[in-house]
Length: 325
Image 1 (cartoon, one colour):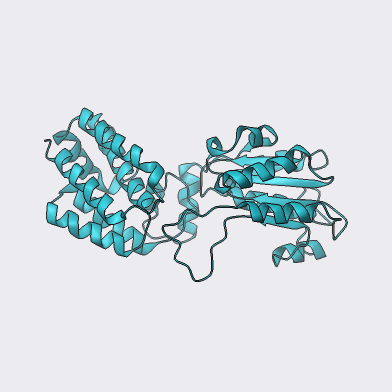
Image 2 (spheres, one colour):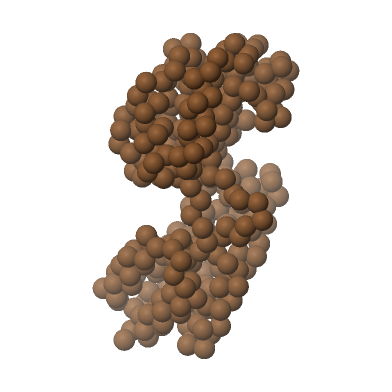
């Protein structure tokens, strides 16, 4: 499907369906419909009876196969989640073996006699070996093969991969469009969740993590040492990576920084009073120092470091920041 806020981009692409590049790179914010756009594109290009607007018919054999995730000329590269394994703290990757398997297949004859399409998402999840393996086939692509790459983090891709793709930016919805979508889905607390997710409405509903994050915000408004230790232990029970905690805390510090400049919060509007009070009692220099600590830890967000100990250390630093020591 194509979400309403991407209709213009779809019309631009559909108008040139007979003069396509070997590879498209769809870029934009996470959870705004880029993968759905790429899937719609793939189905439309494999469809045997597309309509005049270029959309898939939905009834031909190719459309039926695509809907059942069994089209023989459609290949998908995405991080695999091993069966029965806890993956919350693992950085999932697309590895070289998966790329090699797809490359071997696309050099064979098309099963249905048309295009073969390879969807890679998110493209930045390819490790270096996988990225180099894909690059080789992008440099000399087989005939009648189209690559569709989706990325949430364009700067993490190899420059040589980006240079071999025609790039299309898929914009996020406006605030009104996103909020309307969430209300149509009957999402509870839609406005606050939309703010936390940066205006991207296609986020996964995770009530347990929402409660855990709310507990953190209450702690950040009035931190206490024993409560810090209790929270670190509670977070650790959920087996979430450090990256999740860093994201939550970073967004809070940004709201505090905005409050210091007499600006409204961006991510936690329901806690505007608490972030404003924290901003009043702290200094900008101390805020930047603490944010810098988070930035230095960011590369280790999925590392095997003790998450509990890291959170205890960070929140202890935050306590000193909050006490203006």
